[in-house]
Image 1: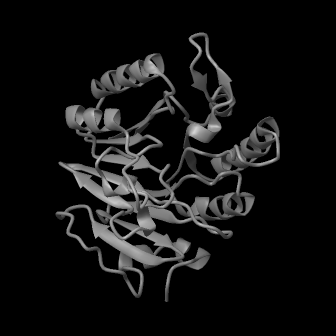
Image 2 (image 1 turned 45 degrees about the vertical axis):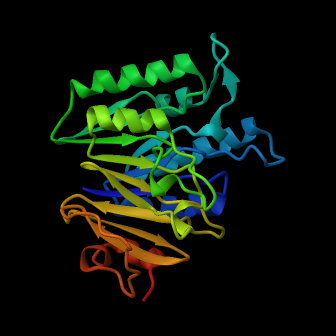
Length: 269
């Protein structure tokens, strides 16, 4: 299975265009939250309409998995906690979204919402406990924020990681967590796009300017993952220990170069 991970597109429509064009090259596309841009002068409700159209088009090209992030919250629930209520529309289009669990052969993929208070946090904890009972050979979480104490949560000045996620990883030991949220982490000397906590791989592709988002390709058959951005390219083997520092690659590894994504850039030559 080939997975494309992007996150934090923040209503950058050119980056949605790129994701749409790349989607047919993958078995699964994951957009791990922060679809909207709360700093934009364009009203959030209008942004939602446009993003829903993009998500619908991507879902026609491949299986799409979508989670919410902190920029996506548009109203308060009955307990006064903010939620991304428009994720209900995503689900009505047949796209897996917040709260869903998706069976992908021998892999279970759990989609976690951004939580904004104690009751929402308890609901995520209950979701993970529920899905633990359904666990397949492989278990992948989509969770917008990276865990506390990880290079994937380092912005160059401080750690912005999620302590509750760290505790849940320690309890359930998923195989992968697909995250985002901390835009700078992959680009900072002490940050990274990848981490390994016990047996759990954690990924955060970050954010960059321009028409192409930074992205991560995960190939479960090759047991490898690669991060591609304007800063270059790095790769790790998922069947080996994570060794730092990660070396920058001058050319894509064979498993990545073999895919059609190579023509959609920016993979260094």
